[in-house]
Amino acid sequence: MMMMMSMSMNMSSSSSSVQVQMHVEPFHFEKCQSMSQLRQYHSQIIRLGLSSHNHLIPPLINFCARASTSDALTYALKLFDSIPQPDAFLYNTIIKGFLHSQLLPTNSILLLYSHMLQNSVLPNNFTFPSLLIACRKIQHGMQIHAHLFKFGFGAHSVCLNSLIHMYVTFQALEEARRVFHTIPHPDSVSWTSLISGYSKWGLIDEAFTIFQLMPQKNSASWNAMMAAYVQTNRFHEAFALFDRMKAENNNVLDKFVATTMLSACTGLGALDQGKWIHEYIKRNGIELDSKLTTAIVDMYCKCGCLEKALQVFHSLPLPCRWISSWNCMIGGLAMHGNGEAAIQLFKEMERQRVAPDDITFLNLLTACAHSGLVEEGRNYFSYMIRVYGIEPRMEHFGCMVDLLGRAGMVPEARKLIDEMPVSPDVTVLGTLLGACKKHRNIELGEEIGRRVIELEPNNSGRYVLLANLYANAGKWEDAAKVRKLMDDRGVKKAPGFSMIELQGTVHEFIAGERNHPQAKELHAKVYEMLEHLKSVGYVADTNGVLHGHDFDEEEDGENPLYYHSEKLAIAFGLSRTKPGETLRILKNLRICEDCHHACKLISTVFDREIIVRDRTRFHRFKMGQCSCQDYW
Image 1 (cartoon, rainbow, N blue to C red):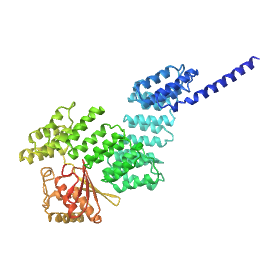
Image 2: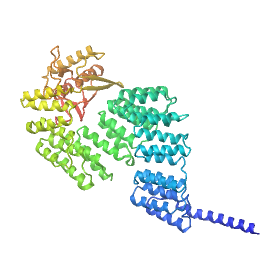
Image 3: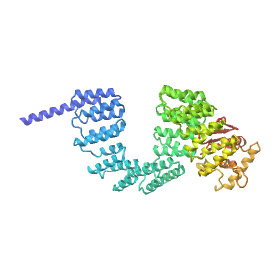
Image 4: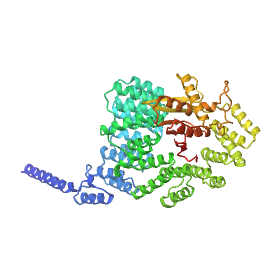
């Protein structure tokens, strides 16, 4: 009889539990859109007497942590404290949730782990990866490493991969390798973590050696190695690896590889390659996320196809126009000197209720500086602070100094620097020096010039700029002293190089180059090109380069200005393309005044559009005019 009563009670209890579950189901946490809805769901749990059930509370804690607000975090801690006997699953949930939210200090996450051990709750394989990510000191990571082995997870691949990641984060590469070699059968994550770790610390060749040893490469490992090359500006090697991947693997180009290689196209100005990747993305329906979208727009902007960049940007559905895309497009317009268009796009951004960030205003101020929009720049500098509460960073002040300096308002630019809340860095001071040279403010230029040389003694551009400032004022002795100082310190002028893409191949030319495979033919074409220019009045303009390290005439008496890298690239392009084709040139330094003048003449004499991207902006030459309106 007693047994029958017990069975009856158990059945009743089971039935009640099912009934309770049915009541709870409609309020499932996944339907929560806000903390207020979550509190309503929590109240239902309490009324139904399920507040101590471990399987119902973790999702609530996780939601609170992901809400990423201090109130939600406090609520999550209260929820956790309400559980009489939290298990490993619950501890893992709160540790992982707070790690995601980044609101709880790392030490607090490690204290939660200590609390877990004090309550005799054993960690499991899900505990250690989160703890290793939370470590902000290698000593903490090594302690977790010891615990990982102590609790018997020394052969667990996920835990060991997390250990590798932890060690490479702290540049403990030998320790990372030792962990790697303890894995009986390293998976792709193990190999890729090691490759990425070596790459992160600049050991690209070592990373490639590891990559070569990898028995089976997947998309992630190929991308890790290509990204390493791109991030260190070794774009040619990235393309060689990309071609090898396509030849050796049947891997479909995914969004991560596409994003990396679009960045490589941007770095080399490889428009044809970029177009191929973009077409592949569209043809294969690759998902567009914020990074890939931005990479496509950025590639077209920086390869000189502004119209195509705008077309891609405007074709994006509004939900897919992430802030990075808006910023990229405004920045592209800025680089091309389209200040008014950049301002109009910013206004459209506000109309679409997309909140701008500090990068938005940096690009906007750059657009104003490149277009001479002084009042607009002043207004947006104030607007950024007043309306959006964005405190200016060093780069914003640099843009304002550039804006004012270009416009000849050198004293105002100096006043702005003096009133900055922090000491100006060498970039801001260098911008002011450039303005002093342009507007012949010798006294201030001398002061700032000597200051930037001492701050950046190995930058040849600082010496050349000051020497040119002296020389333009006829102070030859002072110019010679700066040149001598540069020589005494062993500072070498950075060689100028330019690139041009023809039929999918990028060709690179160095200023004064005589070792090119087609050097004889190339120099003959340059000579022919210059003869045409001289027939319409071209005379080499030595302003800005006469007093640098490239002013001495070559042994054959030819002016080295004739063989600046962009002239070599243009001559090569003229000899290899059909009449009327646009030439796109990418240059590592700022274009000099002589080449700028020559490009305008070439565009007329040879009836070509020439687009030159230099270190700071684009110049579009057509029918003897430049898009910069000579304001550069």
